[in-house]
Length: 501
Image 1 (tube, rainbow, N blue to C red):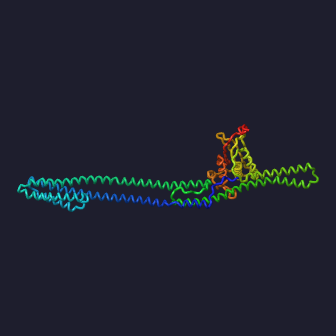
Image 2 (cartoon, rainbow, N blue to C red; image 1 turned 135 degrees about the horizontal axis):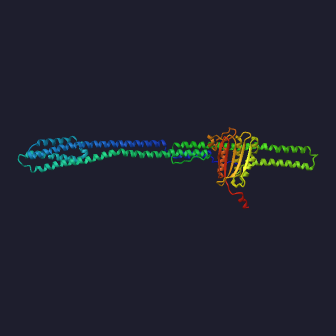
Image 3 (cartoon, one colour; image 1 turned 120 degrees about the vertical axis):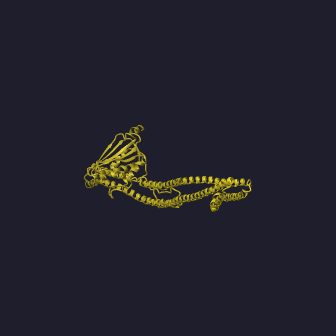
């Protein structure tokens, strides 16, 4: 039996090399990444909290400053109003001084807050104007009786105006500042949400790349292993993480699976050969018995037989020996080790030889095997031994499920809709249960008993047909029977082949 194409092998050294490559990368674990991400979220929240606290503190100072300035302005404006009354009517000078004293108290009591907002220089300048205004008011009271107030009034107006305009300018400026800060305080939550959303998106994208993509890659590894590809996993990223341990475990599993797979392939090959040998032994029994009987008769009657009769008996022994030789040669051709050789073949000849190989199994199973070959079938390209292995396996599978009296039919025809030659192997057995039909081509999957199959026959056969450019699938399976269909690309028709001779 020609073995199926060899699958990649994974030796202990190669497995260790790949695991070493996985381990040698710098480590950035997913756990560390998640911890860093949460730390960034926490720092962002702390930053926003500190910023909000700082903004509220400044707003408190500014609002307090505005209240102080409003009170200060009220006192100054009252002092100036009583100043005018004194100039016009000679009354309320004491009231003006009282309000000015109140204004001084306000400045003195809130000097820290005012200095923080206005600055030391402006605060001192405003205090100087207030003192000068106070001094001029005192002078105004002393000079009123003498009538010498012309030099005092301009200075009063100047110092009073400076106090009022300076306070009003700062009130206006601070009101604008408070309005801006309030607007900023309103926007901070939106900035926070936007920043948080960006960080979450980056975090989700990173996790998607590192978790979902990696999980998909490992799913592909699993599918690849399920299809019989036992090549080791190599590093796909620059850094190692928790999946590195999983990859190392996969490589160890691949090595063990490859070892077990090699053993099972050999077991499957030996089982197929053993099945054929049982049939061949039965088939060899008849020519060997005939040869033995003829030889014994020749020995007993050697002296009484004529030369012609002796030659006839010797010819019978030769014919039976040749018949045995042909039987053994067919088995050896099927079982011999050889490289894959693709050449033009006659599909009906390949199928006929496969049927001849299992002829005794058919007899022992007490089933009927029918053939239906279409005329003028085109040739195909393929490997003779591999194709025999496929069709022997399909027929033996059918025999395994058929009771005595069952029937197997092998049909070969040209597909009318495409350039393929189709071989259908049909049996009238119990069929394959619907819930396992999707798994019958999986390696190692079998419904037979432990001593009857390895679950590799259909998987290996499908791999051979795919390698030859064809298709193999389950066409139908029900209680009335099962049909497996093999499609192989056709080359040229027999008439075209004859025209080239």
